[in-house]
Amino acid sequence: GCIISGAKVKRSVIFFNTHIENGSYVKDSVILPKVRIGKNCTIIKAVVEKGTVIPDDFEVGVDPEKDKERFLVTDEGIALVTPGMLGQRLHFERE
Figure 1: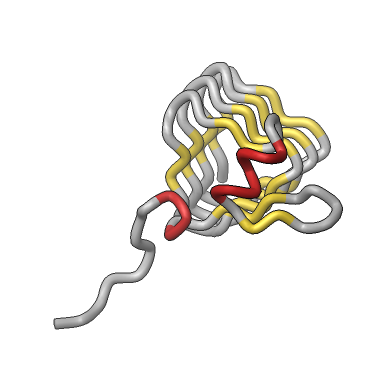
Figure 2: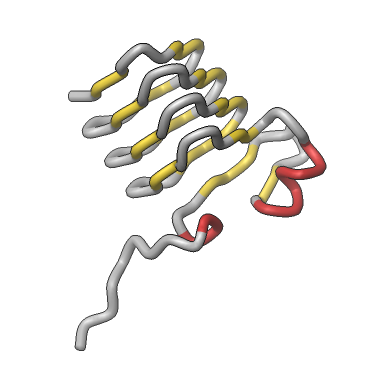
């Protein structure tokens, strides 16, 4: 299941084992499995890849120009957010 604690979610698909913290707002987005969205985040028109950890107070879909600097953004304005784009590693190399 998912834990959506004090957050608002509109017209979005939220996959399993996802946590959305207090004060966050997700709209018109797809949040893939095992994503953590911190407190007071705004996620609008985004696809968040599995395993991504969104830090507190993070925004996507609010400033299109800022989004284009950080993420892959489609012509329709949908941002793809991956762990690598946030400096996170999802898959670890074997030694």
